[in-house]
Image 1: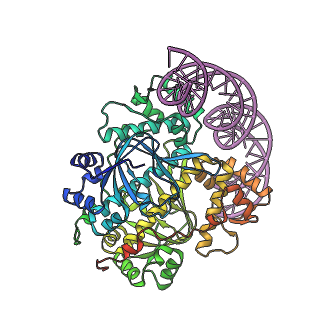
Image 2: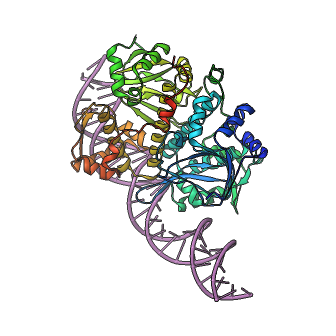
Image 3: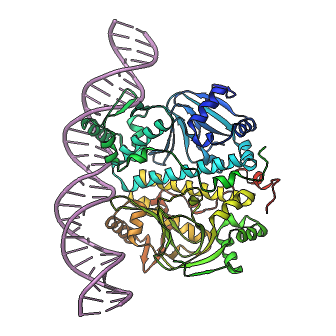
Length: 265
Length: 265
DNA sequence: CGTGCGCTTGAGATACTTCAATGCTAGTGG
DNA sequence: CCACTAGCATTGAAGTATCTCAAGCGCACG
């Protein structure tokens, strides 16, 4: 489950700063302090490893720097709902900071590398370090906004819209962290993952994807997706070009929170 | 929109402490300091007043102490999704602490009373006061957990389950704040609200409610609901008795966060 | 006494599911 | 090198949950 652990080297830290705009806003000193205090280390996982397991105690928070994972839960009758898809630049997961018992699991889809922090030390750091405190506030708000967007889609959009939106969101995530410049990227999701993320069956996902393929809008093969007609897909998704920018403005009062009288160490 | 504003009297504060377990965990001194710093006041609204309006700047955070409201957004084609139903004991809304522009509106359904705090001063208080900081962390986590539960329902549950769950959740909310002891309470939602909260049409909501009525499980009339057979409704909702307890354990590290070396004023 | 809003009901349409079968590919053991 | 299996994608046909359209009803309100 954690086959390999090492302190983050300079390269891992560089990757983290590139992938996480919210972290990049921290000073190098703060970041080093945070990593030291939380005993940060790099963990490598194999596909299908569990990062977190439902109902088991949580002792760490991760920042994904390579690979994909899903956060999901399973209902009493066996149906699965994927709550979030984690790609490089996603943390796993702020939620755990408050909860004592988690209703969901997190499982990798591909080999992954992540930077792992001890959760109790992190809570201490949140108490003591304004930059860290602000960081995790912002991450929590990002999560909530994402969940409510998904919620709205499941309630009020149809299959084509939701699938299109999922693809475009993943494209936006890949692009904002610099993993691709063209609308083509690694896509390790199976149709069953798309189904469980959008509340559909795999059969129906298959048919919608076929429509998108027949319309020459995407090709999806061998774990790679290519969006041939971004404008058409945006149209189907009821999205604007600007929605592909995941740039999240610094939260309210960032300046006020950073300029504090407290010690940062 | 805000026809009447006054400083919270002792009665309002008592109500707040009774309705909000998270606030009740704060000391009287901390609560007084918080109210003083954030210029807390009581605001009364009429039905259909806007508490927050999409895309308009947010200057205040509210804690609802009487009446009902909805938080919702409207898609480009006019379909509406209700994100949350606010009853006494709900705050409106932590989300706004980070966001600079909100994608949703909040509107009252009935006459309401709420305690309103200035948002910039609140951010300051969050910075300075550990109890306040912890309070709003916990509220944000509550929000996220609720959103993901709703999300899962919309993705993977059917109409009967979702409507049953909504009714039972509202019952649990009324009960935990002491507004009812029996499974019967004021229910100002129209069928169109139930529809927009569960992702259905009013026509279909009507038919499901009729089934519940025919099965002698509920009666719903004149703004009052009565649940005659709680067990049957729980069964339909795929819920257990324990799910009616909204008791939320104190979040991780509460003790550690409260026991801090910082000044609380 | 009209007008509007919400509730109710029927009939027909459709988006999505269920069931079932087939094929493809990669991995595994012989 | 081949047979066998498992997982995933694909497709057809039939079923069903939910929607759309349309009409009528009751009640509150001006």
